[in-house]
Length: 209
Image (cartoon, rainbow, N blue to C red; front, side, top):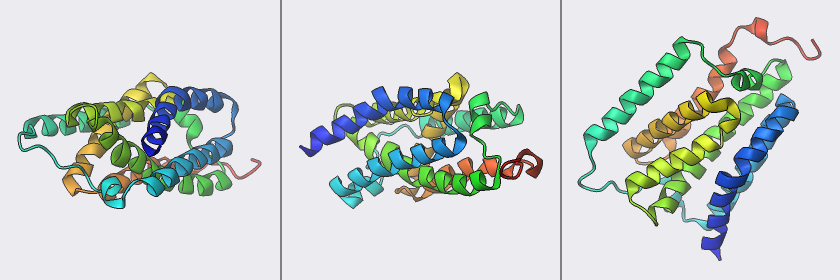
């Protein structure tokens, strides 16, 4: 029963949620988007925490003795280069710009949304999905599949945003294995989302302004 529940969660997150989320992003306000993201993330996270042992969900699976260290380093280097190039170009997609909080209320709610994403999405896409896919494939394929699922969840950001998110997922996965638990990827994920608050105050008019 639990196995079927987990499979249903994966199918929902890969085949349903990305397209519903993309459609919702075109019509909803920023506050509605923040609220919807938190509700879905926390609902899925609560189910996972209730049905999976803490150690299995929180700690990274053991790496095989023959794990190609050079490949991991290459993935991290490429990921950092892509992130740095994207930031240097100011290449945020229009969807990302629309997600950035403007009013004081949006900024407050966005903080909770960013912290929720850092906690919940790491539990879902790193703690849960990697082990889920590893049951049917090797660890490398499981990491890639989990990164693809993470990118699909951000398809509302456009092709560039989804591609960047895929490489960020690989970076978060590296941090997951480096630290042995979800603490590091959660920290970097939350800080990465909170960076949107660093935009000039002029871009954030007062409520109703």
